[in-house]
Image 1: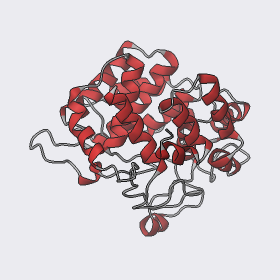
Image 2: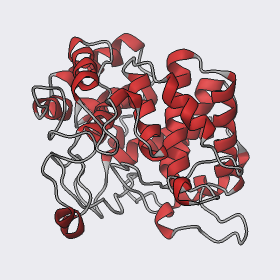
Image 3: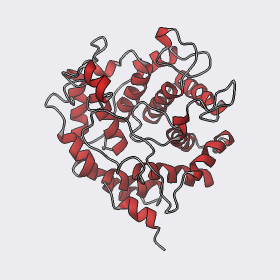
Image 4: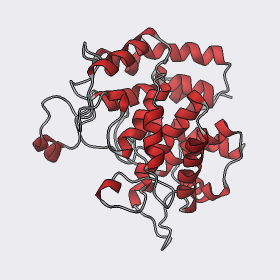
Length: 319
């Protein structure tokens, strides 16, 4: 019997279809790889690549678009069209890192893109942990040597095991958002290179920071650290929610060959409770700000991206 939710997911973009085939249908690798190859030439992946500048960047900037003003940020929100967010979205779509287009992009970005803060070459990293965590994830995925950024992130870990972008301003406690951005980068680095003893230790400590807090609770009081952590967001950009964290722990456990940690149980229960009667999950909110195009139906509507991630997390947990 055909699952109508699976059919609904498959009636979408190649960037979703190949992940459904791999993660939900257990399709043979040649089958989902053939679908993944379409990301470069069809749908959202091709559309985003068509927005690329001749010098390899997007919107003329590394973190913010060229000519972007503080006034627009205040009035319309942070923009998401510059190079760093475009690369992360291509990684999420699943652009083949071995493709000629991906290799050319990596080289052009390395040669021509400079960070807004400090002017460093792009693949040397920025100064903020959140940004560097995503730069590591993108770089490792696309085959760049990001070991120097890894060493910096390891040295910036706080005493409670995680990270905080406000560390340079005196923060001594880790944040959920900074920590998940770094964790995703560390895991991608391990996939690409095997990692190092210090990088693996850093990932374990950051994961323990989240697990001790059941992914969303304050350690001191047990209260939710932020109600938005329980509401599902896509694209996450730099923001945190429990589904993003659950998907990381799923991916990490598969990589490590370990069972799910029982401390994820409360977050799993919340995820189950949010499933709609038709078997899908809604997009609870989205970030304001400039985008190239939308990849969801809108707030309050069933979301293919949220549903894909929720279904693969539950499949992993229940197996």
